[in-house]
Length: 463
Image (cartoon, rainbow, N blue to C red):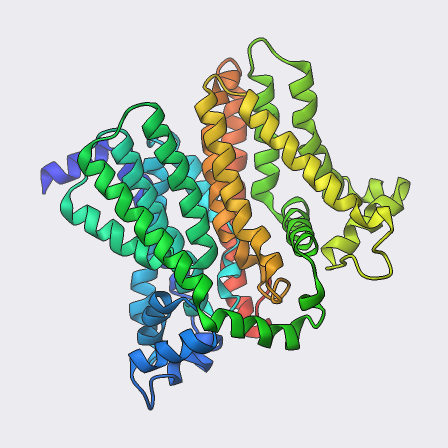
């Protein structure tokens, strides 16, 4: 017992995980699932039929997420809220540990702070149980899969038990359609690195092939599922009657515009990411003025949509009105189809993305770091942009950004690690920035507690 206490005292990782555990447990003490899909619908599905029969019916009429819904159905039956809360707490701890592992435990405080900045209100979009099981649990288990790839890359031992847990978790995680595509992109880039650097081993190859098989199987399951096609028909009728008339580019532009509108207007993690882009450009040696100028494009636009919005409204009201329309779900229609102004938001958002990729690819000492972050960012963006190909694109709420938010957290941490030497000669400024981050994190935790309580009075609200 004494040795455990000594190890706990010396290893700072345990301190951060303990802080995270206390915050997560405290938040879950106030979570109640009085409404939402689990309480209203899923709790009654097994009243008169079996689990297999229900899953078959759901697969044929609504969704391909049979593995995810199997867990949701069993936990919703008789509303096992306490059991769900225990598992959800463990998933939070798993995700935080996995993020710390993927960043080599270098900036654990940063991972912790950024994680608790994420608005918890997005987890109540369809009820706490349904939303967390559908979105958060796949993310946590999928991130564990990324840890296994990281261990394979470093030739660390991957035990049989750990490997089986990872594979079982991937069956669940990649059952979420867009996350399976995200994981496939990351897995493919990882495989490319392994081939280029000759890091393959026989056990590692078998393990990666199994992950590919699981990922592709879930993608095929989603593509051939009759329920997914039926769901599009139903949601087209009730949510977007002109969806069937939209072209591929129409859907892509709507998803792309909606994604960047939410990121630039409401996402504090994207603001921090844009700030770090400037630091990355400033850290290049020799410093490139062109790259610094490019890095300012995303930050300038975000500032124009947030802190400087009153000035923009006063001096360029048409510019503000154009992007306000996008945030209010305006999209190109038959009347504005040939109006070039209608496509201006898409062009500007595309320029922002290009600027981000240029800085990431050219701003680091190692090209692998920049390309890796670019692939991670694009994989996260795919999970949100893909919502443009669904009639429920505007009904899903902020929870569709959950996967992308944690990609941004990872990217911010890596970018800080690569550029922190800039602040080494400015100890007072570095300490001030840390204090500000801790203060904002504390405010975010309080805000999340308010969000939990407010949902019982006002429904789902997003701060």
